[in-house]
Image (cartoon, rainbow, N blue to C red):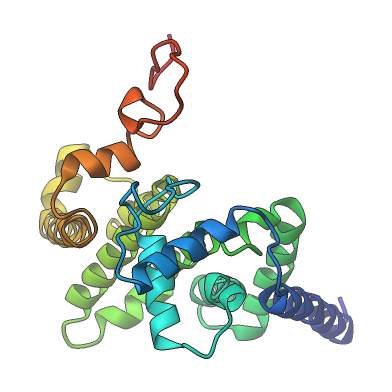
Length: 274
């Protein structure tokens, strides 16, 4: 295929992706009704009100994890010149860059190839699921954290980090932080980066047995578990004051009677319908 055609295709894809991101990021009205919930929690935090105090703040559409409101609140504090719609969509322009980063790592640092793979893929996602790419919701945020882990799990990235001083420790800590950020933003995004991490530890070679795998990577897995637990406890302490019951009610128990949602009695909820 002629190089000129590829370069023209890449330029058009970049132009389309750039236009979509810019228009979305600067659009001053809600693109979807649930965007307002994020801004509500940001304003509550700014006013010193706990977003999880149901006597003062309506808790709706924030059932994925407690980190989204905290991150957007930090953005509003750090970048006060941004308008409300720009604050809640701050990860929208970062998401396509994170896809390029993933492709860059897996294609061993070939930027042009990475752009040719990542940008069209991003445009396809915009067409098939714009809720996950273009809205000021937790999905773009979790997508950025997921892509960070996928980049770190690329063999080329891992090889380069291994050559640095304390490289293995830095890689393990960074992956653990990325997994923790993903989990507390949208927990359902976690399986993909978690499985990629397990594969990266074994250099994507099938282990002889589960026991052999665990023995070979006990230190890395233990450190990741410790970092994840410390991060989780910090978030739960900061947001819920170590009230694990409240944390369960807001997130894992959101579809159960413990959540307090609704006033009409319904049949029992089963996590695994039989």
